[in-house]
Length: 315
Image: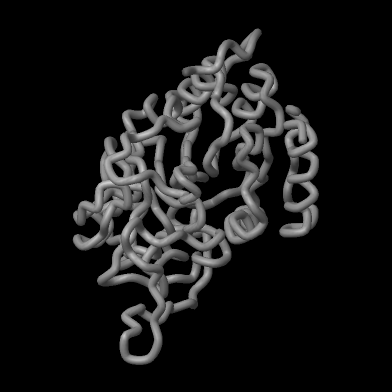
């Protein structure tokens, strides 16, 4: 399916979430396998160590979102699902913000979307950003635009299993060039915790690493198959018995990091979605992220400036 066709299909899906509230820019979880050497966990009766999920609360937005435009990337093979978007799209639009989607790879159109936006949200990516697009995003955040990137483990196939063998070196992903612009990296593999988890050992707990407006009111969060983040300033870290699948090392790992005032990276694409937004304090964290998105002040308001060509994709 072409990129343009994906954009049209994606728009139709989102209209079912918030009818009439979403504008499509004309800028043209399956089960996780067992860890190598360990059987898939089956719990019954007394041997069930899982914490029963707490599912209550709702996403809210106390900051003024009127007149703000939030652009969500759908042009890099990364159209997020209805379930991932419903809580944030409905909250933003109910509070006066406009939500648009980038559906064109062309640099001029991509820049036009960013010029009209106050914040840019990326849910993973299967296709690389061009050098022109990377420059546009950097110019956007330099001017005060807010960037939120949610990433996830790469599903590489080795011998029929969807995780690398022990000792496999980190693999570069389509998001690597974008994240590296902000000094953030992603370790290969996913996080799990066999000692303390929410319903499933790949649903790991995270706690604030310090004081931040992103974690105000947050005691504990739940992340599903999160990646481990390096670089930036850690905002949320996993529990101390969390294990990285590729190294089998148990440690605390960064799962949310901030790079300067205008860039935030989250190691899980599902934490804001319908399935997980009410787990622990996830709805509070989501509310804080939305406030972060709508409180940036971009100057000049029309940054980034037009680009004549897309340029080559970064290796």
